[in-house]
Every structure is written in structure tokens, then in C-alpha cells.
Amino acid sequence: MSLKYALLGFLNHSSMTGYDLKQHFDRSVRHFWSANLSQMYPTLSQMEKDGLLTMEVENQEKHPPRKVYRITGAGRRELKQWLAEPIGLPSLRIPFLVKVFFGGCLEKEEIIALLKDHLSRHRALMDRYLQIRKEIMEHPESKGMEKEFFFGNLTLGVGIKIEQAWIDWLEESVANIEEMNESGVRGGVLTDQRG
Amino acid sequence: MSLKYALLGFLNHSSMTGYDLKQHFDRSVRHFWSANLSQMYPTLSQMEKDGLLTMEVENQEKHPPRKVYRITGAGRRELKQWLAEPIGLPSLRIPFLVKVFFGGCLEKEEIIALLKDHLSRHRALMDRYLQIRKEIMEHPESKGMEKEFFFGNLTLGVGIKIEQAWIDWLEESVANIEEMNESGVRGGVLTDQRG
DNA sequence: CAAAACATGTAACGCGTTACATGATTTC
DNA sequence: GAAATCATGTAACGCGTTACATGTTTTG
Image (cartoon, rainbow over all chains, first blue to last red; front, side, top):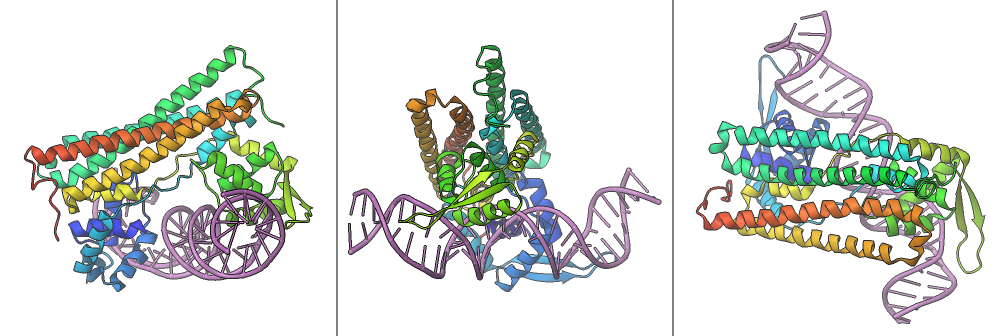
């Protein structure tokens, strides 16, 4: 239930609606946390019931009424407490590695195609991260916003390192498997197990 | 629903029970896929209904009867088809990075403690991976088991690279934040937002 | 005129975890 | 005598996704 704390984190910075929060998620933490509006709305109203937030309705002429959420003292306390306590590593589920693990069932061309496809996906993601970093760096507001940008940029940093790790590994693996082909291991590692 | 395909992958290698499959999961793919028995049993019986597996009961004197699952032709076909088709990147959810992102709400000592705690967790995981790799390499059977070990070792490789990326980033980040402390950014980046 | 932005929700489904339920045998 | 291993499951719960439901205004 980190969604709750991510919401508290943004609302600690400023009060806003569920819709606004969705924008913030998509613009700043999408690389390690995503959220749907259909999950956020019920979560916000539950948090209000729990006393972590208050809600005020702002009527509008040209749009449906906005529900502006504001963090309470209890909300701030719960946020700070959660932030400070250590947390374990999340358990991973990477379907792509399931495919690689059972790569012995595929033809060499198929496994190489699989690796190259994934390589292009990771390169695209890396490009996006580098673009975001560039924008952060060039952002004129960043001079007065050190607080907000410093940690955001830090989390982007680990994303970039991890993407680089994937890219390196995929490039090496493709080379590795292609090489085998020529040096006579044929019929060995890359033959499929059965039909 | 990659669990289904992981089960097919192991059963393609040899027929076995749910309990046996659990051992295989824990011994070979735990670093990127974990599974509970309580999820595997219903999945296996569903797969049998779908014609991907057949099941034979082996009665035992000293233990409850074993249900041995065997992959069918249809199962093999479905496995091979799934393995060959490309797959997108999984969406990440890393609660730890939520904490770092809102690190501005914490005292500098708290955020450093958080980072150091995570660093020790990643180092421990790295040690486990290196230990597994060492065991694979030293394993005498590996000479006749190239097929089985090659791809397993490959998936371990990306785990090691990613752990190294985390370790490097965490070490740099700790140094980064500790350094700030001394060079006068005090009261800037690391002051908390509010109470 | 179509699409995107603004603004809110509910319901069903999928997948995974945890707790509950049972019980013999082997190892420390 | 306690814990781990062998061997099977069910039920409840948590969290996330997708589809459904509604309607105006602004932008292209």
C-alpha cells in the first residue's frame, strides 16, 4: 500500500484533486510507480475517512465540481513515519527472463530475435530517461526548486543505471549466442528440447 | 499469466508433481520469478482441464498420493508459441524509490540511514547471486548439462548486473548527500517540507 | 468534426499472498 | 521432542488493471 504514501507525499507539498495527482504521478514518478485514476479515487476517499486528509468541494460552472484534498496533521505524521522506516526489496516478476530461461526450447534465431527486441525496448526507455534528465537540468525553475528536483533526479539516476545494465547484458548476450553459432557448438546448447 | 508458462517450461523437461515444481522454482528462477504452492495447485489442475497437461496419481504407502503432471502436445505447442513471441517491459513498483523521492521530508541522517539499509540488502542479494554462480560453475554435472545451465546462468548474469547498478548508485548517493552536509548546502535540500 | 483535457466514479476480473486445514515421516 | 520434509488443497484478502458509465469544453 505505497500508493497511499505516494499520495500523501504529493499532498504534503500542495493540496489538489485526484485528477491533479494523476498528472503528478505521470510526470514525476512514472519510472518506478504508476497509478490509475480508478484506483486513486477510492483510495483518496478512504484516506479521508481515516482522517489523513480533508476534502473540500469546489463548484465550477464549466466542469464538474473538483474535490480538493488537503493533508492533515495525522496524515503528515503517518507519512513521515512510513518514509523513515526501512523497507525490503520487492520480489521481482520478469516474464522476459522466463523466456530466456527456457530459451533451450527455441531456435537460435528465435532467441536472438527475442533478445534484440528487448534491447530496443530498453534503449527506448533509456532515451526517455535521458530526455527527462536533460529537461530537468535545463529547467530554469530548477534554480529555486532544489528541494523538489534533487530527489527526483536521484531516483532517475538509478533508473538510468539499471537500463544501462540491461542494455549491456543484452548486447553481450546477443554477441555471445551469435558467436557460438560460428564456432561449432551447433546442435549443442541451442537445439530445442523436444518438438 | 507467466506462471502457466514457467510450469510448462519445467514440465517440458520432465514430468513431476506440484511439490517438485515448487523446488525447481526455488532453486533456479527465484531471482526473477517466485511462486506459492497455493497458487500452483489450482493452476495445474486448470491446465489439466485445458488439455495442456495430463495427470496420473501415484499411490504411496508412507505419504499422501502424488499427482504427477505430464505435458501434452498441445502444452508443448502453447509453450513454444509463447516463448517465441516478444513481450513488453513489466511496469515497476519500487516502494523504496517512493521514499527516496519524498526524501525532502526527512532529516539528512534519516535518508542516509535509509540508503545504507538498502545498500546492505542489495549487497546481500549480490553475494547470494555470486554464490549461486560459483556453485553452477563448480558443479561437475555442468559438463553434460550445458543446455540446462547455459540459459540459467545467463539470467543470473542480468541479476548480477542490476544488483551492481543498485550498489553503485546507492554508494554514490550516500557519498553525495553526506558531502553536501559539509559544504554548506545545509538548510537547503535536506530540510523537511513541513512538520 | 474529432480528439484531448477536465472531472468524477463503479464493477468485474486477474494475479498473488497469507492464513487455514490435514497428517505421516524423517532428521536434528 | 521439535523442526523440516513430503504432499495436498481451500478461502479470504490485497492490490492493480480494464471496462463501463457520464458529460462539458477546449484545441487541432
